[in-house]
Image (tube, chains in turn brown, yellow):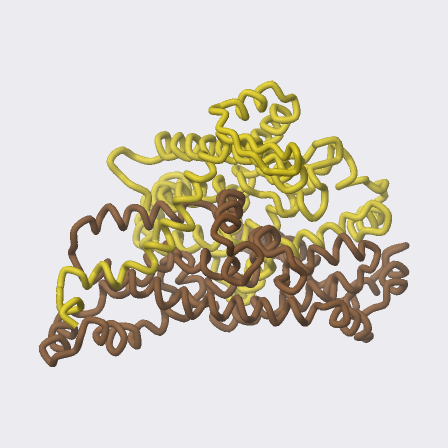
Length: 279
Length: 297
């Protein structure tokens, strides 16, 4: 009887902690989305004094129309362009490198692989300032090149592909070689089609990485025509400091797509990130 | 045609694009950063003049109170934020290991901050923490707590940034720990249970040793990430109020982009890189067992 009571008690405690944690996790998000459908005066009215209405979505789309008049659409298109080209280019070159590490033994392979591992220990923001100087020297400053090309090679993704390609049976590749397929054919026609799960996860990582990048696009491409979505968002928060509903609307749109993708491919995303196969 | 027939070339051809990208844009900038930190750029007479000054930029830095203050804030932030985030991520991962009807949906909901970019999280939290009309002051007012200044207070701003970064970071690091926890064979826990281990003993003698490599990886990666945390400073505080959130990376950013003092900027970045490497080296030295690399997967 007492055992039973104790067990119940710990379950309730667990639910209580989980519930409080969930509130803290979701509250900012919920409030922001709810407020994005209100006018500014409504937002402030619901806050002073605070009442339950602050968490109930309004039904005005004015803030959304307003941000698109403010060049938000342009930065969305830019971000789509940069993200999609980065995913395509990044998947291609990193899977090729992963293939090389998995299939071949060659001079310096261990050292080169060590460099690749080292490169993903370097946080992108730490090299942003010297990289910015470099872009100016080679004339890529304030162009799409600067936004895309330096971000393509990615140690983590090379590593993921290498692990996956190591698992492909050698006999399969040898048979294809005997049939006269070139090495690129083996890679393109046999290995790559098999790697759908890795490709989904890796592609998602590259996409989210570009969609969410802020510092690099802020310093590497300051022209408004090249602004990416997070940069525009940051600009809104200083230029329209008191226009809360537009900040919320812009944040909601910018946050929507990565969330949808992450939840759609949660398993692949988590696998790619942690390197542990999800059940 | 003959060119491609040479078998030894094949792996290098496959490797070339990614390798060039890695070297040119990830490793080489570290050296550029150091090299440029030895150069003084003067703009006298309208023309840009670059002078090689050895370590003079560093000398100026070491005589500068702002730099030392910034270093102090960085050290404080590092000591607080990393253990806090690791402890919370581990706690959350353990909580989410429990079996429940709703565990799938609960886990999914906790992943939400991973999908919210840091600038978005920063902006929304900035509005929540608004001293006049913010949600948080409204909520604590319900409990009779007077409104707080939060980001405009010298004493609270850094704590607010810690809160924002932790809100965003905990779910992310938790993912690794959760994956590590699920990798521990169930038999270990069953064996411990048969031996009559208490939950705490199971945690201490099964979970922690089994999870050690994952924790080490998360600790190192989190530390490296937090050394360059500056999005909240760029968007919300600009290093203030009264330099209270002016961490090294932000001071480096500001020296370059606001004052065009690239020598100073890159000296700071170089110092920060060296500090990061030393701290990570120490973590690896003290926390990893001998003859054992970190498991990067």
